[in-house]
Length: 487
Image (tube, rainbow, N blue to C red; front, side):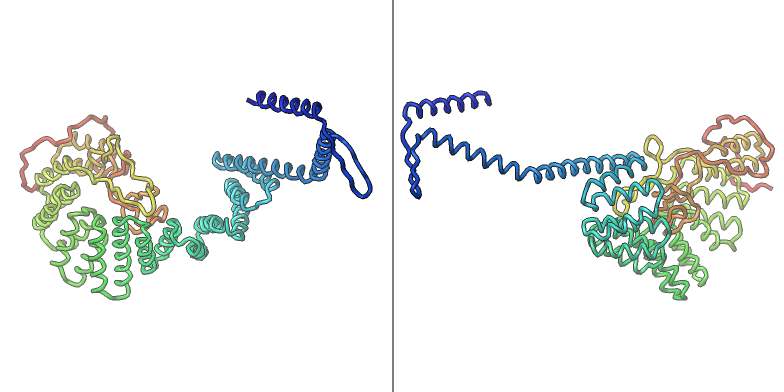
């Protein structure tokens, strides 16, 4: 196409030249006593030469500026290439390469906001928190990067444990972007970490209004906050208000036993035994956890052994599908030396499902979920505690071989249920509103970890026994011991 256009232009010029040669014409110019006579072709040629001279003069005059512009464009392109390579180096975890590209980008680009973040990230990769802080602080001076600089400084303050500085910076970040999810979550976490429960409730309400937290999770958070408020209220001596707050907390966070256990203890201290019993039985339906067993045992501690067994049977009836119900009744039967009843409850515990995995909607996104077995369900099989109870029963019945089998199985059995953090995976046998490991708020949930249990000391009756580990059946052999008491 270009060749055709060039050919057409040449043909047009040749035609014009031939036409002017055949029709030269005449041009007379008279100006201030001067007279010029020439042909039309010569006049056109003079105009063409004049235009070319003007164009050449313009190129000569503008060439220094053009050279400077091209140089700036080359530097800018090279700077952006260095910036891109530095970001790739940060993603690849190469701090020295990232810092080298950051320095080059800073030299080539006359826009410091573009390079400050890269420089700060490179310094953090190298472990130079002081340099990173200087870069983040410099970012505060530019409106475009102020929010990013605040986020970097907040994270540094949290890692250093400087909660007051983190709060000050988070408040400034919230003034810039009040609906940023991580800002609201950070402020909520700081209020909860410092035990400022009323302030945390206010922040949670703001998060709900902004749609930053799912409704189900907000309800659970409110329950946990009410429980902490109940504890603080009780310490101030406001007994009735503490009971009301604990009851409200149990309704909102019914999967946690701590609020009901605390309320039942307080009722028992006030001599309201019937109310304490009702509180534990109601909570056991949704949260069959050891805290409630301990309180139930306190309530019925004065009863004779057989009556205590009956009381634990009533507790188990409140949640007959839970494994903990049958284990609690079995331990009461052990205390009463009712081996037949203990056997019946332990067999029911063997067939009962383990505690289900929780699947809570997290604050502003999905965090790590508890580990699952291959089929996505909680791990099946007896836990270490259940194996030890079965070994204890076999020992009481004089079945030494069966006792040794269950003791051997206890060594590699599944771990007992416990509170597992959904954020860091840390474990605890005591529930608290904050994870003891990572400090996350309301991330502990009761279930069986999907991993082999760590060996714990065997009971005294098994010390010194070293036997092969056969594979016993999941059910105990039937033995006509009924419910009689052994001497």
